[in-house]
Image (cartoon, rainbow, N blue to C red; front, side, top):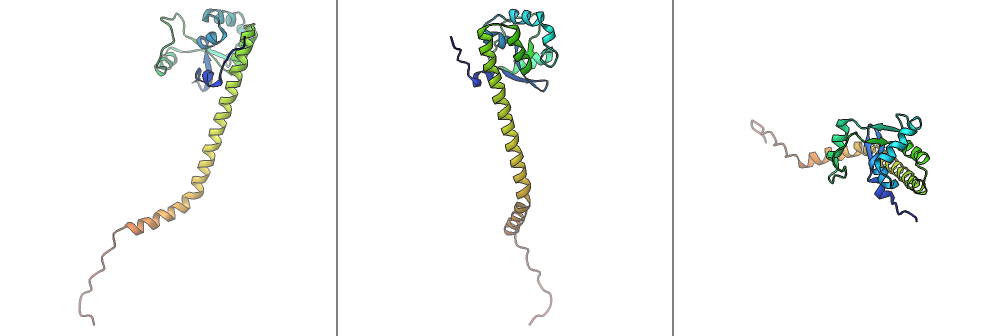
Length: 167
């Protein structure tokens, strides 16, 4: 059975934490179709495959901030431990510890989503650079135009009355 995972649906599960694009263990477990504890156990059994730049546990403050950003809570009651966050490399590594056809399929969809997000960010950076270059280029020209407009709308200075006899 082929899963219908759309990049736009997966992209909603990608968060920016500690300067990294990450996915949370809870959301990954839902995508993989396993309980969170099963995902966490698989990771703990293979912890050497998950260095700090692949996975990290959220702090209380990070978790609190994240929960406040998500309007509809899908956190499901009380938690004993703070959730884990997986970077793109960590998500890729999950496919090697969760060995199922679904895990492979989900991983492919997630990797495609990360690629699309990276391309979108690059496009936005390029656009911002182009706009900045245009602003610099046209600032001087617009400065002259604005000066001319200011002259036109400025009230005329009254002519000084001459004192004395004038022919």
